[in-house]
Amino acid sequence: MVACALCEKEVEQKDAVCMNLNKRADGKKGFYRCVMCNRLSSRIYRAQGKVDWVSKEARKEFFLQHSTLTGKDLRKELVNTTTQVEKQTSKVDDDEDVEWLDEVDLKAKYENKPDQLKAILSTAERRTHPTRKVTLYADITFKTKSSKSHEFQAEAKRQCTSLEVIKGPKKIKKEEGDDGGAAAAPTQNKPLSNPQRARLTKLEQKMGQIWEQWTSLKDNTDDVALKPFLPQPLLAAATKAMAEVDACIAEVPVVLSEAWVGDFKAVHARVSAAADAGLASNGRVASLITMATEMLRQSS
Image (cartoon, rainbow, N blue to C red):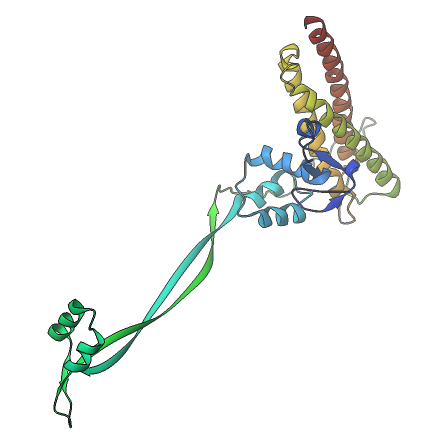
């Protein structure tokens, strides 16, 4: 078992992506992300770039609560980021303790502090003792009580503003069919049937394998020694193809949920196309890496 660095869940190592394979080869500790968090992290980066999280705990909560968000829904959640500003206040209370002493007592008390004695005799408040009829001087000492308090204030920072225009449903024009009769009714949104759910689940597993293969290939494409031998336009096309795979991987769990209602044929066609393109892309990249490795070996 390994711990995901983002959501902190314990997962099987086969269900996690190691983010520092090169360092692990040097005997250093592995840094893992679970598959769901790794995909969400990729989608967040494409939607907004780098995010400055308020705290590690805030990032953890986001990844736990929004693991399946995509597209507009994900961007909406990222519109407002909350930062915390710590305010520290200090309160100091001074309590005066006044002792009224005559000149003789003051001289005895400040025998070794002649400057302080002189200052008290010249500046201190005075009063006459009612019965002793001597001049008394105010000898003041202070006792300070201090307290500190911390307050966290949440400030919402608007990063961007968007206005959604909600349009009504499009009117479907009545068209004639090939035989001159009324055209077939348009496809209606429906919940998934059990066979459809099974087909989509199989596709989901296939895309997971494609993504894992790409993750392994990506480590090789980032190798400094191999890069000069790898055509960058082809790698860019592969990255784009895998972005579509990643988006579909995030979409499928939403479609498989009990609450989903929609056009299964459109979803299945889109996911199938992304899976086929990703599989073909991985094959081309793998062949390139093999060729590059051989060229590197011959040149050394």
